Length: 205
Image (tube, rainbow, N blue to C red; front, top):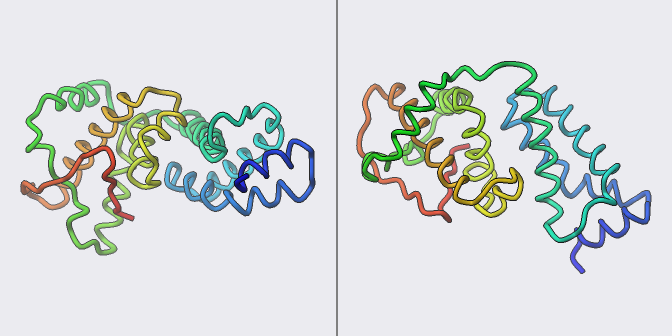
């Protein structure tokens, strides 16, 4: 029996030490996920607390047919997205969203650029974070889970309760959005090969 399954069984038996061990195992990952989505330490701490409170209260509803971390990530992601939706409206208009929808029809070569091929300095990291903040919520979350948290398409789909094909489409649009935002930063856009295979992931932070 792996550690996660053992912890679930112990938590369902209400063993006091099991919950602390669960936080030791997943707490840092949950906090880091919340920080990437919210970019605010206070909000991330709130999501951390809300997530593990919910896990504690709902552990008996976990059916153990999915991975424990996927279930916990789903809870954390939902809390983070609720904070965004309550705090502000998305700054990207429907027209802008339609623009990136239409970009799906571009030749693959026009999409094959991504700044992970550039040696990153602090200024570029800041600009990348700003660009990420401008991505519409539905695309930003996919990008964070897939390219920053390195989750698989199947894991991301399970966390967000959407199809794997939907994950792939949104990820492609997020990458297009980031490409265009970063082209403004570089003041020019050179063709660069960016492997968009399902199992390839971007490491920019």
